[in-house]
Amino acid sequence: MLRLVLAGRRFDALTTDFYLHRITQTPGWREELVADFGDLGIPASDMRAAEEANRAQEHRFRFPPGTTEPEPAAAHVRRLTDAGMAPETIATLGGLTTPVVGMLLRGEMPKIQVRVAERVLAIEVPF
Image 1 (cartoon, rainbow, N blue to C red):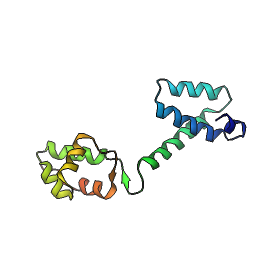
Image 2: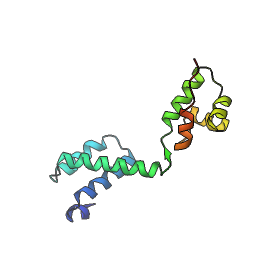
Image 3: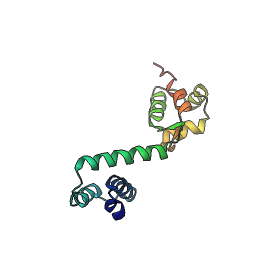
Image 4: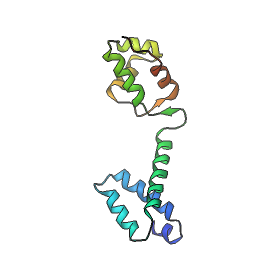
C-alpha cells in the first residue's frame, strides 16, 4: 500500500485499505483510516470517493450480472405471507419452488436472479 502512495496512486491505496478494513470489520476502522491517511495530507473528498468506489466494486463482485440483492423480494414474500398467502401458493405464482420461498423468508439467500425477483414482486398482495 505504501508503494501505491509513493507512486502517486493514492486513490488505489485508499480503495485497497478500505477493502482490507471492511473485510476485517475491526471496530473504529473508519476513524483509524481517516487519521492514517489524514496524516499523509489526503483530502477527505478522496477518502469518500475511494470508499464509494470500493462499495461499487464489492457490489459488482457480490451480485454478478443477472443477480441482485434478495431483500426486496424477501420483504414482498413476507408481506404476502402476512396477508395469508401460503408459501406453496407464492411458489406456484412466482414460478419458484417452495424451498426457495422458505429461504427468502428465512433470509438465507445471499443473492437472487433478477428475473426471479421480478416474478416475486409481480405477485399481488391479497386484501
